[in-house]
Image 1 (tube, rainbow, N blue to C red):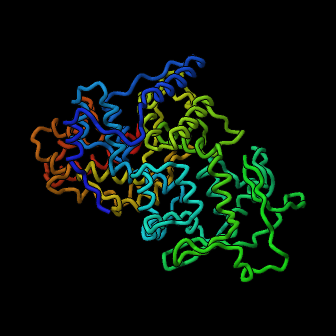
Image 2 (cartoon, rainbow, N blue to C red):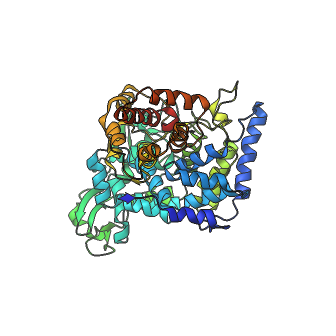
Image 3 (cartoon, rainbow, N blue to C red):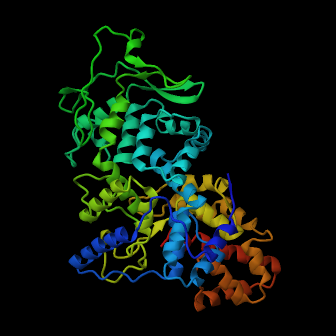
Length: 535
């Protein structure tokens, strides 16, 4: 899939005085003011003086990376900096949220969060069986999140365009425990693995019955190949069992889940077999589709648990907060239990209720957080402040593999491909998305230092419109270094940086050697923390 920078989009931004906002965005000033008030209230209670607002240069880099998964081009950055309108931050947020780059970036993020990282084969299959294109349509059409969750877990596409939604269940190959352990954090923001053999020993509200109840809702499903493509069929009988705890006592595996009632289920006759159960099914909705049980466990889970479950909204807003602010109001974002209390409980309650009231409008939620004062703080931590949960400064976030790939391509070549070979290399080396703790390990360090993929990309970035060519076309060394820093870091080079790089480049008279030194400088900059982190 080839994605090139399209200048026309940003000429619109340059010339328009008004921008048509996303559907159903409404007036976002009141929600954003509410966020500001609740955050500021906590600062006052804690006696905290937050960091000052970020500079315009820092803000525009940050918001591009967060909303469209890449830095702004030099033209986009300069357009924003030159804009004299008082609402230009609001304008650029709205512009980015309507772009295809937003669609692809959020698809990358949620593919990783919902499906996990995988092999190259996994990614090919997700593309082949339209999971990727379906997820893109979720963000392009701004589909309500609760509807998205319901469709993924029901896994019954009603049209050819929706057939990719089955892949969340299908890729897990009838491993019903793996399915349950994926559903809980992905959609409810809790982890239930520890409740497999006993009630959760720390978060005691998560019971063993919740683990096996969630398994039971899906254990009648079976991967099926149909004329219409992969499907997850469902049996009308079977799946009854007991589970045992560590003490050896057993309990029936009932249809239940955390913060949900037990769902009564008719049990078949003792000797009833599947082939005798035609009266247990309704006719398939269309030719080639699996038949559907009259009592469908999956359907009951969606209709009676998912649709009204309080954690669907809370988990999603907490995850988006973590994506944009560096950590969740509950941290880690997928452990929303009694052990991990929210840092701002009133804010989390309000965000979740507002999300429900907006009909689970994803774009609106992202917009109001991106326009909040707390999102726009400087990333330099104020002296004496240690607690990141106060959100008193902007927390640095490592770029994902996809963000890093786009950033390198766009910076050095002025365009990018979302499926560039560099992406796979980086996915294997930098797999984390929203990591609980930020650290660079030996594997990452060795890749940045020695892997030929990066060096080869730099060496081959010598085309007519590439950065290295533009640098060498300038006669002044100072102008070259100023362009270098604006292009890679999105900021002005300091006097010391100009002097040191000049000395390094001028220490060789050979044109070939100077070319190599330019490549070394570029390598040092794009593998640095300043480039690899959003701040």
